Structure formats: structure tokens, C-alpha cells
Length: 377
Image (cartoon, rainbow, N blue to C red):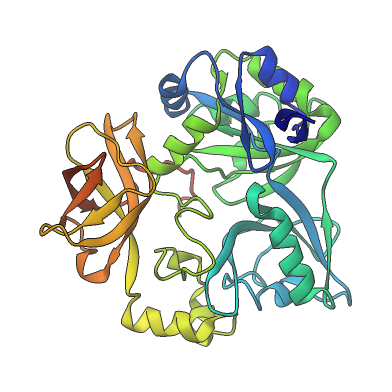
């Protein structure tokens, strides 16, 4: 059996091939890294109009309580977000923690409307089997985990995403960032959330697998919509300052070090009643030894993952975890870990790129302003 035959295919595989997608292995799936438009133009199109992303490789699952209680009470043992307070149709970005306070994965948790007392979770493709195993091992006597193997997941991202999707279901315009609802799109019942991984306004749409291709083609009939591959998805999320699981954090790195403390509920961080709470509370008070920062290299050469970060004397102080060229900025951007003494914005550092020491500065993220549609008071 060839390597290609061992890769899983999403329900949109044939659509990618028909549209000239360059297919590459990613998280065990054959996925499009780009289309004939090219990564740069795909990126800019998403910023200007609407990009259609196949994210069906992600893991979707329902979580229910075995005794009829709120399953959020159980998963809060290993997730530090304020999940029990979620109302139907509300969602949270949260973290799956180990006993040492390290981040196993990040994920989205949403309270469904029905069945009552059910949570809908979306986990990263590369981690989904591990995540499911952790949930079963830690909480298997309290919750029932039901992977949704019959659902595709499609992201529609960009400033024109609302106008495109509202033509099919006007009620999606009423959603704000981090809200979700059940919607009938072209006669198909879908779970639609106003969320995404680009920093742009947009939606993620969970659709029955056998309807995914027809639904995607319907969206692509709109002149404002283009298929977008993994390459532009990565450059978009990097400009937005968003972490990539397994790269910008891992099971040894805490939420404080990863600079994602916004995922800790206020009352949760006061109580510390979650896995690794002692370490995380200590780091909240004293700071982590090393922290994730944004980096702006001077010049045009991008600093990729693994590039060594040094101080001005050439002493190694850290490594780049994500890096590339930011098409919107027209300049290279990166993220990486440095000691807290070097973490202040504007701090001058150096990057060892292809044997040369290049000047850079620590910078605030996001590099490009996020444009989520939030509720106005």
C-alpha cells in the first residue's frame, strides 16, 4: 500500500482535486495546502471577501453526563474555562490540561439546545484520538463521549462571510462571536457557530457528511467565495496571533507560559480547582520562566519554526515556534518563547536564520487586528 492510500480523505476530497488543490499529508489526512490561486492570493482574498476552508479533519463530538447532571461540571476538572455557566448556543475556547498544568490541546466547547444537557466539542485533528482517550481515562465514569463521525466541518471566513451565508439563512446574521445555533441551510439541518481560526469574522458549519460537497459547491457559486488551503489558513492564524497546537504549546507548557490566560475563567483561576492548578496559580502570581511572544524580524527573510532566538550578545535564549511571511503586513512575522526578562514589547533580539544573525524585536500580537463581530452594549 502506498503512503497516499494510507491517508484518510475528508468528504470534500474530490472537490479539492477537481479544483486543482495541491494535496499533502496533514494530521493523517490528504488535505489541500493551496489551489491554483496560490497561498498569497488565497490569504488576501480571505481578508477582503470570503474563504471556504475544509476543516472536516477536526474532531467533533458530543459529551453527555452519565447521571443526568451537567457534563460541564465533570470536564471542568481538566479544563480551566468557566463551562458550567454556558447557556445554550454559547461557546468557549478552553484548554485540555494534564496533572502538571501542561496543555494537551485547545478546543471549543458549546452548549447545545438539544438534547438538553449536552456539550458539543471541536478538537484539533492531530490530537483528537489522544483527546478522546484522555477524556475517557479521566472522566469515563462520569461522561459519555460520542464522536460525530458522520459530520463534515466547513469554515467560511472573511468580511463577506455573513452576507454570503445569510442569503441561505438570514438568522445567521444575528449571531455574535462565540455564539452558535441550529440552522436549516438548503434543506439541510446544520450546526453553525460564529467562530474561526483566521482572525476574521466568519462561521464554522457542521454539516452531514453526505451533504458536504453539494453545500460547499452552493457556497462557491457566490463570486465572493474561494476555496482556501492549509497554507493560507496558517498565515492567517499567525497574523491573528493564534496558537497552533503541538507547535506554539505542548503538554509541558502551561497556559501562563503560552500567553493564553484569557482561557482561564475568573472564578476558576481564583479557585485553581482544575488539573495542574497549583502550578498555574503560582505562575499567574510570579510569572512563567519562559513565555510566548510575538516577533517582528527586520528585513524580508522569514524565521521558520525551530529558528534559534538569541540575545544581542549571541546567547541562545529560545526558539521560534511559528513563523513565516505575513501577506497582509507585507513582512515576516513569528512567535516563540523567550525568558520573561526579554518578553517586553520592543525588546531587541536576534534570530539565527540560515547561519546568519538577523535583527528582530519582540512585538504585541495579534499582528493584524482581529475583526470578530462582537455584541455591542
